[in-house]
Image 1 (cartoon, rainbow, N blue to C red):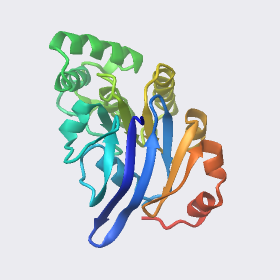
Image 2 (cartoon, rainbow, N blue to C red):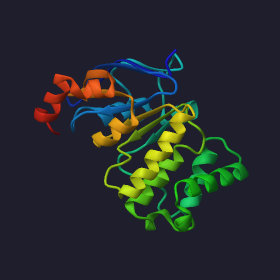
Image 3 (cartoon, rainbow, N blue to C red):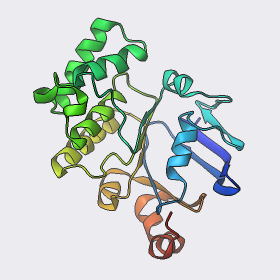
Image 4 (cartoon, rainbow, N blue to C red):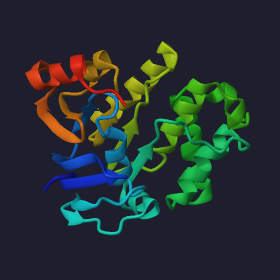
Length: 239
């Protein structure tokens, strides 16, 4: 049984097909890179997987069970946690309280959420800004904070949309090392990124999309050597 599977996912906007029959599966404990040129449908797919969009056709299965009519709240409580490409934090709430709020929303008791938040603040090296309003953190620190919110309660699968984009190399390495540790402990992760060196280093498997379809899936280096994937990156249509 797969941890997460998509079967024939289709989505159109104003007559333009953003996804056209996307099918793939992720097994428990896998760390998979989702790659493709701009406009290939990666974020649209993550929006559907996390319940923020409803597909026009196809189905999502979590633990082999269809997630019909899935909402973001249902997805989160089912174990699908999402980090957005454009950072979303409570800007007038402290960094620590952002984490606590995420934990309580996922079912932790307040005391347990506080304890877990302190652990993550230390692990993500945010101790020096923990009491500051999140809006006063740098862009990279805000990304680290939202990243941490995905792991307040261990998710069945973490969906990370461009976690390494436009962040300082030190913060990129903090996130990468965190992902390595969680993966070694059995965490299932799907990472969207344009940072190919990081994808190659982190992810044994990869899925490449272009123009709303899956071009190739499998071992990362084999996917990157696929001639259709090379053509998509060198001559793909940007959006």
